[in-house]
Image (cartoon, rainbow, N blue to C red; front, side, top):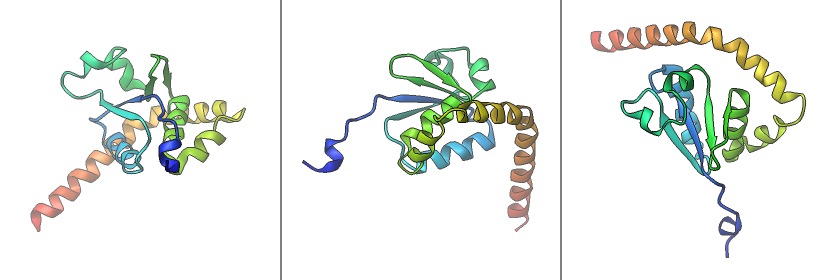
Length: 138
């Protein structure tokens, strides 16, 4: 058997993300391109997403969330750490981020970022609209 077949397949991790947010879409695209192991993606902003969401979609849109196969939910920095551990190129970062006090430091940084997110989203939307206008003018 090859080494790849000898590795256990990790239980699915479901990532809930805001597909209406340009920053979130870009970030998720980067993670998807890095081919994480055993990850399912749920765009919480998509029509009908509420049917597959374990929490109210509005609550899921407030913070980054993941759900383990056993139903446990993680949010904020712990959710990012769980995802990083599934991405081969970022697994080292995910392991390192579990060493105390790093989870607490990362959560504090995430909480500082959250109030800035709407402004960054608006900036990204303006930038995208400006690029589209430039392309249309030709």
